[in-house]
Image (tube, rainbow, N blue to C red; front, side, top):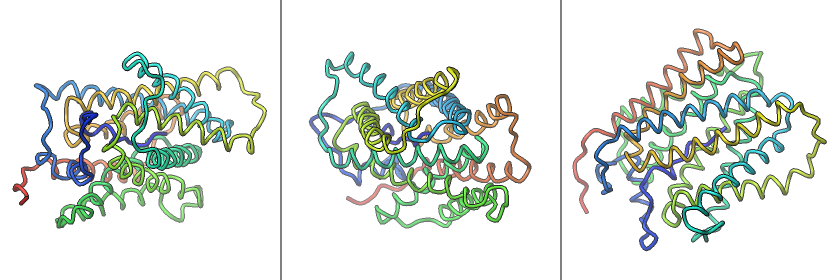
Length: 329
């Protein structure tokens, strides 16, 4: 129930310098062309990324557990309340400010709206499909963003890039299997989650010019909380949940926030293209948690679709990491 955040893909931008959008998008496809301060070892970043996806898997498991009984907006409201409280406390300890000033409010609002939509579709998706299947489909977003970034930069897309994109989309179709009587029109939920997540990632590349990652992370929670609070009264249901439901929702909010914060820290040790393949560890985590907690194991066809998406994502990262010829200035 998260959008894969690339607000963390670059090191924290200087408060006195704004990076061009083209420079940020270049990081998706030509990481070697972007000058960043290197860290002696990327191992720490990789370990933090793997730990982050464990928390993301726990978040999705918590959503799967409460999705059948908790209204979507109420669950999102709890998620953003926890997100905002934890992040605001961290920022106050770091900067002495509860709510640092944003340098681009309009785009922060757009980004938060995309995040809320992505979370809402994720919540609805997990009512109907297994965690492993949802996770694999959600991981199509970075592949799509990489291709779109190249188009924005007017780069010539190689046949390999198009084939990897086709492989990822085909994997999603194999998983959801249009025409599957058991799913019906509910298959639109995970696909809409991917669309909203792609827009979210592209908007993030723009917002990163203006605000530091942790500040943007806070505003995502604050604005998400405000948006959910504005709509929640129209869909309010008097809560009559067992204490375990409340505890699971709060724990899910903590896991989501901790996962994103770990990812923010991970990108200070390595580039996003180095860490991207390790995001696909979450598919294994999701499969394990789905089996242990819900006795859900994807069938052979779904496993094949999941493998197609993972191969596409890892293959795209390998292509991106290959040395490229310097671009003419």
